[in-house]
Structure formats: C-alpha cells, structure tokens
Image (tube, rainbow, N blue to C red; front, top):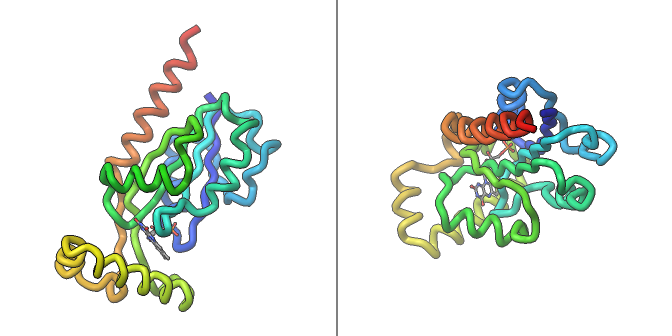
Length: 180
Ligand SMILES: Cc1cc2nc3c(=O)[nH]c(=O)nc-3n(C[C@H](O)[C@H](O)[C@H](O)COP(=O)(O)O)c2cc1C
C-alpha cells in the first residue's frame, strides 16, 4: 500500500506530526501546496494534516476539492488542535468543515501553542476569540485559570496515543490490501 502525506502548518506542530507519521509509515510528507491530483494519483492512501482554527481545519477546502478524483482511495484528515478531543468538539469540527458529505477518516491530535510564532494580527484574533469563549463558558474559564495564560508560556504536546490510533488503522489497511 502506497501512502503520501500532505500538511499545512503555521507554527510547526502539524508539520512535526506529518513527519513523524511519514517516518513510521516510511512514506513522503509534503507541503499542502504540492497537493494536486497528478502528484497523488499513484497512491492508495492520502493523509492531510492541518491545524484547527475556530474548529475550521485550515486549507481543508483544497483537499476536499480533489475528493471526486480520489474518493476510491483511503483518505485521512488529521486535525491538530490545542484542545483535547471530545465528542462535542468532534461533532463541531465535522459540521463546520462539512465532513458529513465525504467518506474520509477524521483523526484529532493535540498540538501545541506558541504565541511568539504568530503574527501580531493572529495573536489579536486569538485573544479576542478566547475572551469571548471564556465569557460564554464558566467551565472553560475555570479550566483556563488552572492551566494559566497560554500567551505567556508556549505549550507543546506530543500526542503519542493519537499517533498510535492512526498507525493501527494504517496497519489494518495494509493487511487488508494484501488479502486477495
Ligand atoms: C487563531 C487561532 C485559532 C485557533 N483555534 C483553535 C480551535 O478552535 N481549537 C483548537 O483546538 N485549537 C485552536 N488553535 C490552536 C492551534 O490549532 C494549535 O496551536 C495547533 O497546534 C497549531 O498547529 P501548527 O503548529 O501546525 O500551526 C487556534 C490557534 C490560532 C492561532
């Protein structure tokens, strides 16, 4: 089974995950700009790794635009975000990105956050978004008070369990592809 990985990454977490999956699978990982049908047509499995911003998976539209041509392949979207996955958030990601319309496996990995690597405008957007979210949800506010200000200390997370879950599926597909 031939696999190829594409990624978008602003601050490096999604790129690191794409590269770590690529080294486990022994395949190539490429910037999303290379994501064109002629580049991917000879592969059986295509994985797209990208961060979540306000539940929207960045650059996912470029991947979904190719769907009609690649729908018979094994398709994965790996959404990297700061929040730990939970069913409600997963539902939001599916809804916001219209993923009910596609047969694509969705995995979520916990990434990290480093405000120093963001442009000032991005930091501002993030601060406004967080303020609104915290005011709306007292539970989230309590949690935020516990972990401290994410703008002060960079967060780094290596989601080993999440990577293993993806690898389990890849190995199962590999086994199935050998059964005639
Ligand atoms: C403007 C902005 C919005 C974000 N929105 C979310 C979000 O809705 N949910 C989430 O889990 N993480 C959110 N994050 C965190 C990123 O998904 C996280 O930092 C991710 O690891 C970044 O990946 P990258 O390093 O590959 O760019 C947001 C980050 C920024 C800058």
